Length: 113
Image 1 (cartoon, rainbow, N blue to C red):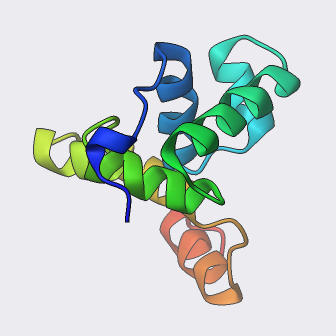
Image 2: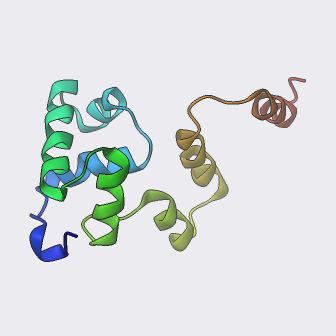
């Protein structure tokens, strides 16, 4: 098992890319937010995986949060008391494909049903 001593620190851009990944953004969305290319984001995340000894994004985010290298976005929103709108926007990021039930609920909220 790897401890914090075995993990190399993340560069600021790597931590930023991993933070966007923790929010559920795709590589393209992350590239737009960071104002760089998709290839650059892919390379940054690959370096994060290497430094954190992770096989995928989920494992990399979990290890980074556990060792205090990044903060989990949704948890930070709840603790900081952000408004409901911001929390709803973050929650919808985690939900890639809405179900029929979710679509009905959204339509009812907006009066489209």
